[in-house]
Length: 288
Image (cartoon, rainbow, N blue to C red):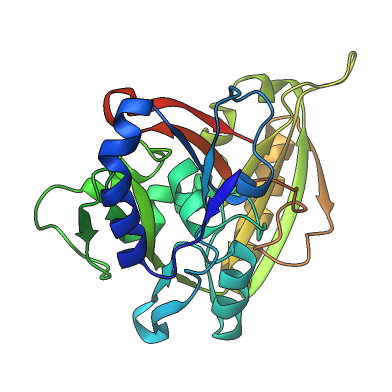
């Protein structure tokens, strides 16, 4: 399989533009994402191209005082987490500091633990640079906290899985690194109702549900509190009181190495897409 590794967004746009008509008639599929070197085996047997943005991995603009950072889409999430952490800041990653690309994270928009308190992926993304499948390059949004001009296309790109084009640069919103981090495990019959944690419990920053409890056991949920020391301490006391009133078993557990390390990295976690040019614009999207 041939792998295309553009050195810049301009190179990528030029390649897409020059290949549009030729691949439009052939329905030639293109695989993008970290899995380019090892694509899913259930794709059809047609010859394939892989587009890798591994050379687009620079920090374009970092403004710690403004809590924003702009990076190229090929940067790995682990590298982004390292750069942000060194500045004393934090990005509530949806799936931990995995070896997926920033562009793949935005395009896949996975659900994560901290979505409960900090919002989904689309809340973290301020602007995107996009190469459309006809070679046109556009920029949506602005790397500022408040931006109300025009349509909010950025939110549409989050979770688009490559249907609208290839992301080449992303601007993200950051948060100050939490001073305190405590995790608790809750267990009880009341947790069979997903709304139970919203009825009387203090504000929670992360929630993970046990989707398949063992036979004879009560459903369980893992919750996380992050923020200032006083805030976390006060909410922890409130959570314990609420659990006692709701007849829930509560147990504090040792937190992970940090708020950005929710679960271990897994190989092949980037989104992988099979896209066809022209009439067969999108054949399907697969998450490896």
